[in-house]
Image: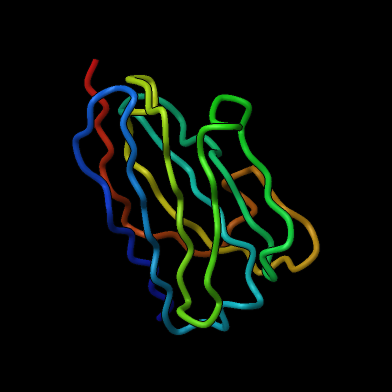
Length: 125
């Protein structure tokens, strides 16, 4: 059973920073594109950022580009999301996801094969 376990969420003031981690197990991590999504109660899950299997290409939602950085360490089977200059509208439940597609970066939830349980991020104003 593939496992993705997120950590690093919490409460932070606007303008602050957080670093999320997602540890993967029981999959060949270096063969998966990894993505971060977020969801607010009552709204659809939305794409935040993704990184290809080798870590050579990234893609961001317009709302976070320039403030968030996605990275991965294939030796540790872990993907990270460094979030800076946080805004109250960044509040949500953050999920990491794995997509077995090697050569493209997907931004839709349907493209991802495995999901973590999520971690809450709350940004106070």
